Length: 330
Image (cartoon, rainbow, N blue to C red; front, top):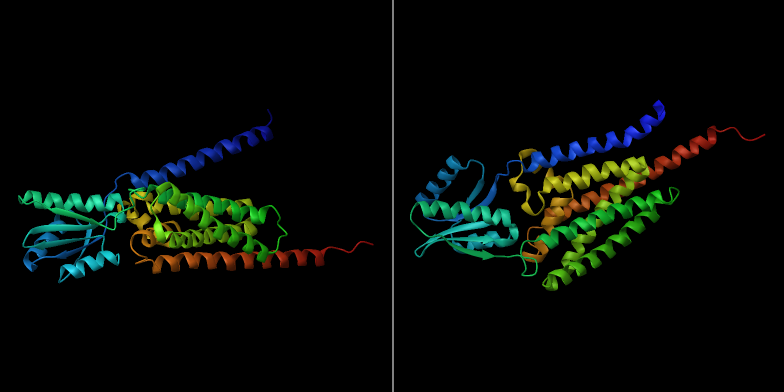
């Protein structure tokens, strides 16, 4: 085997090992030591007790929770409904009650419940726990919902890439049409399929269709733009930096609140976490708290749209200059 043949064999081997190491480092550093960060919790309690609780958590679990004090039970419950907090501790005459949003995620809801249960158990008190906004009975942990998003994103990558790579001369407006039509179809089919498996999405399925379609369009357009600009390499870059890194930084069903600072910082800026949060919002919180997520996904779709137009214009201008520079046949 000569040197050229050896290089041809070595390249895929080395490339695969490099990707393997990078993925293990990214995943390992994300989940090596999961701890809660800035989980929003409301408190309704006498001022002295509220101060003691917040001071105790600040000392024993610094940075784990972000507390907001409310004047009434109704205010604290409304904050959960609006997704301003994931739980509220209400201390009344009948004892302490923790109201927690189940659809905030198992890890978050379970972590908050365990933390406050231990605090009151140490004082010899029993904490009553009330779950509101739970996941549906057919998808009690939100796993089906998350993997529906994952399947939608992967298929949208494929659609966006093929819309460009199968015919590099295809007009950019045609590419947009392909991606958008697929996004609408993916939203409808994905939501209906997930609802069929979970059996209980009800009337909120229309909102789920819209969120899946928006996420699909955002990913598909960005991938198409990168494919038009850089070819297969652009698709690879998009998959790694937007989809894969987005999945890791979102924390999946665990949630980004348990990941290190760097992942929590980038998660809201990539499409995956906003998409999953918006999907949970329309299904379990009557569409509360989804404005920021919808704007984020819309921004990604616009970036892809403008990027596709710019890459297509650049390609056209480059081709025109090449034809002008070529000598005419005699």
